[in-house]
Length: 300
Ligand SMILES: *Cc1c(COP(=O)(O)O)cnc(C)c1O
Image (cartoon, rainbow, N blue to C red):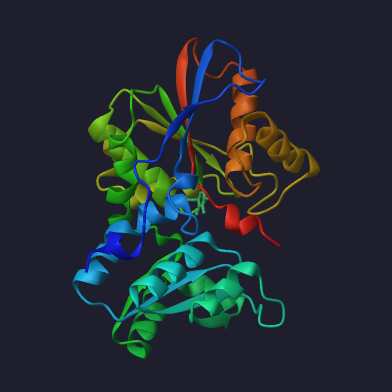
C-alpha cells in the first residue's frame, strides 16, 4: 500500500508573493503555503512525519505512541494519519482534559485514538530513557515518536520544502517550538540553497534551550552557520497571546486572505513586521515565510 493512496497530500505547496501594508518596496516577501497541503494534517507535521509513516507502512507497524499537549497539532496530524492507515494510536497527553475535551481531543476520540492523560511530572519524563523503555515494555509492538515528531528522520521530510522552491531566497523564516522544522530547513538549505539564511522565531521562552534542541537534531551541528533564532516574540510563553497579536492575525487575514493563528504563524509574522520596520533585512532582500499550518489548534 502506498502512503499517498490513503492520504492525499498536495505537494509541492504553492508560493505566493504578498504585499501587506507594512512591507516596504525594499523587501520582496513571499509565503510558502504549507498550511494548504492537507485539510486536516497540519503542514509542518506532515513534513516531519512523512518518512516515519512511510517506514511504518512498509514495516507493517500496528501501533504508534506519541506525546503532546491538549491542542497539539502533532497529535492531531498523527491521529488522523494513523486512523487512515489503520494503525492503532496511543496519545500521551499532558494534563487531564477528560471533562473538558478540546476540539483536537474530540477528533482523536472520533478517530479511535487511545488517549492517555498524564500529569505534568510524568509528561516531563517524555525524553527520559528509563521512561521510554518502560513505555516500550508496556507497548512492545509500538513505534514511539517523540513530541512534535521532531527526530532525526523528520529532517529529510522538512528539507524537501527547499527542493520545491521556485527561486533562491536570502532568508527563510519559520516558527520554532520543538526544533525539528528549523533543523530540517537548516539541513535543506545547506544542501540545496547554500546562500539562504534560516531565521527561526522562538514561540516559547527558550533562549539557549531552543538552540540546543535544534543543534541536537543536526548531525555535526557545528558545521552549520546558516541559522539564527530570535527570542523577542514569544509573547510571554507557549500559546500565550495578547489583544495586539490577535488583532494582528485578523488584520493579516483581511489584507492577504491568508489565515494565521496566534500560537505559531501569528508570532512569526508579527516578528517579521517588526524586523522589517527595524531594517533587519538588507535592501532588496528576498524573504520567504514558511506557513507551517496549525489552524486546527486555534479552534475552541
Ligand atoms: C509544531 C508546529 C510548529 C513548530 O515546529 P517545531 O518543529 O516543533 O519547532 C510550528 N508551526 C506549527 C503550525 C506547528 O504545528
